[in-house]
Image (cartoon, rainbow, N blue to C red; front, top):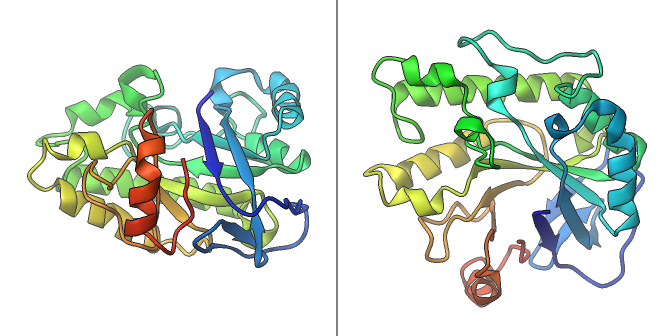
Length: 259
């Protein structure tokens, strides 16, 4: 299980995510919910990797083991599978029903970290990219390529619309308290002449959505690719995180240490 641990004060204040709207922010110590610092321990539960009938038990077991945030990737290859602009967001309670999965998290009073790659890796075929992307003329993935940026933005915009319409963000009383833009790009950035510009573009895309929760980037900065803007929380992902903390505190004094 891939864990994100967000350090804060030792006192944990449990927030009922069924209330009508709450504010999520961060300071140098922690993610804050309605101004109160939270100790967040997150574990990966990917909705399409189990039948929906199993979700309640899996989430319950995670809670019993100390998890209070469920993090999941959003799988592009599931939700725009066959051709650009034709989306698949079922509302039938199937394993691909991301709204029902997040709703189950809400029922069980756990927060959610919604992670867009859109390249997820995650031991998932083609890293979660839909195969049709390869057939787009002149496309180059994860760069400042017009065809790719348009496809990426369209997919993220449609996903956020679906989730927002279901009132699943914190601002509406839902469990989603943070979201990720791009995933483990730092190690790849050196292979692209415009990698730093792509990181900047991704951050600006995240800013363009009025979802009122913190955005994060994973494995970006602190010697691994260019750092995101200071308002995007930089998180560590890997075996080196113990060596990363001190530099993170220096480079991002207004962010919590997150990995």
